[in-house]
Amino acid sequence: MNLAGKHLLCTQDWSLAELEAVLELAEDMKRERWSDKYARVLNRKTFFMFFYNPSVRTRQSFECAATELGGHAQFLEPKSMRLKTKKSAGETIEDAAQVMSRYACGIGIRILEDQVSAYGEGQELCEQYARYAQVPVISMAHDKFHPCQGLADIQGLWQHLGRDQLKGKRLLQVWGHGSLARSWCSVQESMLICSRFGMDVTMAHPEGYDLDPAVIEQVKKNCADNGQEFTVSHDPVSCYDDADVVYARNWMHPTAYGADGKLNKAAEIERALQYPEWICTEDKMRRTRDALFTHPMPVDRGHEVEDAVASGLRSIIYDVAENRLHVQKAIMAMTMRLEE
Image (cartoon, rainbow, N blue to C red):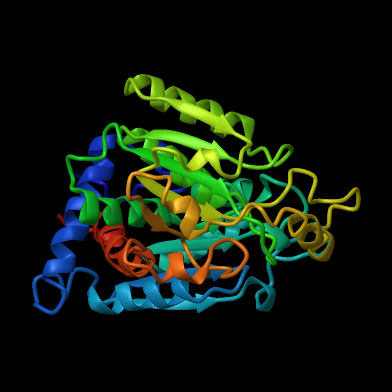
């Protein structure tokens, strides 16, 4: 399958066949990691990584991925570059994207909640770079979507449930109270891609913690297209009934951005901590069908989930974290390899 030059801002933008092709390659790359089979796929090629926000796994996994493919990942901080912003003069996105396309074989962008003044601005930035760049633009997580995480989630479910066993399984996407103000990107991506692969989806959260209505409508459509169910629950206990996969993570309230366009993290955390009943516990997990526990990390232990669950036998958090490396290698190989 030829995916050369294709941008990846959300898994919903790619066909199911394209997603499966990436996952199949990721599986083979995982098996062949220490052989020479893929060691020169990106020989002498560079991947630019724009980090508006810091990261642990994202930077590590992309740098390792590029190295293992024979290429190089270059870390860039926009604040140290002369880029045009709303408040300062500088190089436009059009000019920056065009020039960087002459240097590198791909551009990655990570821009999350505290680097935008309103939900959707991160998506707009990624779209603008994709419009002008002559090389693939890959979202390394922005305020709406996190496609690499979504693919790593599915690879983890393939590993533990079986590739052909996802249809009809129930994903519980459940809000967790926490001491971090987290964006919507990972949870929205999770529900989109899991519903594409035929899973039932239950979204559970306290009243008022709604996600993007347009994204939820797409999740509903994905479920309907596969003959599966989408349900919403505001009960922090009964929502666990019959779940096969539990994905417990905090996300911000829709009113997290103030009138001044700034994210008040302290106020958002204070609000979230008012719901201590929204924590994933061993007792709640017993209501499931021996469900797997997953999370994109970092895990807010003691708030989103108990240690006993996060580190338990049914937790796949480390497998999913490892899979970020393999799916990103596959994405880079398929989109950035210029020759056939």
